Amino acid sequence: MAMQTLDGEIMVDRLDDRRLLAGVRTRRVFAFLIDYALILLLMVPLAVIVALLGVLTLGLGWLLFGILFPLTALLYVAATLGGRGQATLGMRLMDIRLERIDGRRVDPVLAVVHTVLFWAANAILTPLILLATLVLDRKRTLHDLLLGTVVTRTG
Image 1: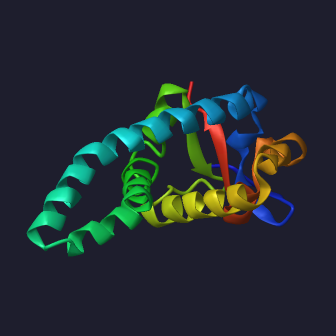
Image 2 (image 1 turned 180 degrees about the vertical axis):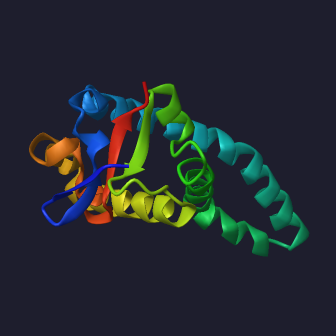
């Protein structure tokens, strides 16, 4: 695997191919919307389980409703983005994936940290978070830049 240095970061040469970045910004937005819908669907059976748990524990289990969405989202991201395909189901449908610029695999911990940083940046900069992709190299966002990742096309 051929490597080069870019602004102090070691990067695989394969990421110089601009075709890997064509349409990534738009695809990322649609992948996010698809993933958001899938997470909401995953919450339905989990909400039923938490409701039943609340009945069994005389209401104590209902406290889990407060963390149900973030917990579901983080488990989904860890299993999909941190998995073999390095992409959530929405990203797979949009033919994109998350890669580390040094060529190593994205593990579940990095996937979760990537998502937490995305939500933190999104809470502060909404909708300006996508503006970084207009000026940063390889259409990266701020959390991509901090973590040494890039989103590329798979096909």
